[in-house]
Length: 435
Image (cartoon, rainbow, N blue to C red; front, side):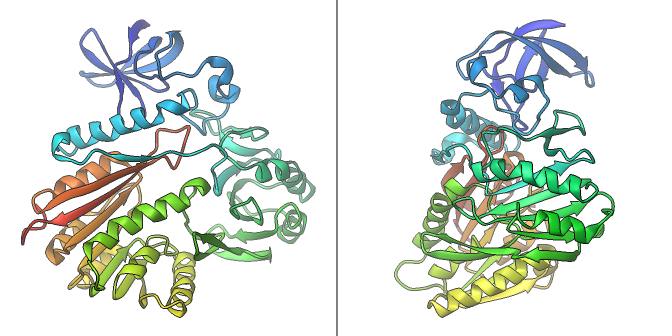
């Protein structure tokens, strides 16, 4: 056990200190905190710390009475930064991203634009993934545990979800129980509230389960163990209107989770693509990892034609429907490819693209996709990422041929260390990447 002061936070969200010269990572610790921790060696040059007590709080830590009690005792692990002051989010997350750019990407922050910031209010979740156990408990998992923390009060989900959860729990029990996940999707004002059941094992009475849940939930879909829809009740899709841009979203499809930042996020994307073009529409644009088209929409407002690539059947179906709606509004035609980004790129799909937009999963762009973008050499590349480390790696790859013109950070997940990064890269010349 040791007592020490935390220096900073690093990608992954841990606090970093040096104990007797050895780098020490402590989950739940913030800059300036004097903490007492149990230390476990991890190799010869790294210690992992288990936070036992905050001896003296640093400036970024909330007073203990303000912190969710379940986050404090670890019975709910949904928010790893629940103890951080909301007003410190910008400084903490900006430092985390700049640290990743410097240490992972080997990029000089002085050569990058100062990051813009969009903060968020609480009760932000438009989508939630809740775990359900055989006792009817529904919520997030406890910290470093498979135990379900029954969700009764929460800073991040909507009031609608909290109000309806008691009836949802009762429905699970009345139908003989359910074990697995309940993924919810709701309208911007909390209604309708839709659910998708992802069972860990086959429910005893599938039809009875759907009947019981259709009421507390306005629509519900049951998947089989392979992830295919097996039955449903009520509506399983809704339409979200974000500043006049309409998106059909099915409960099985991916969509941005923060209701408060949809408008701001869309504005950031419009700025990232529009200035590249001047008065005339460009030729061809490609949106990789398109989902239902949240990023595709601003591209279709600016470009002459768009190719959107999405591998998920549900998301690509929604994307195709949304593209038809936008075309009727006079936007550019969108050609939808149900494909992985890798397969699309391997087939030469990026050739001739003047603009490429990419919002890959947490793992970032694969080497094959990075190389394909480099060969295509679009004039503008917009990278969106939810992981600062892989974001830094991808930016570094393109740094030989591109300048980062704008960088925006969005606090899509308050109370956690996660942050969304959006960068607009402009090609300097023929070279578009390295490696």
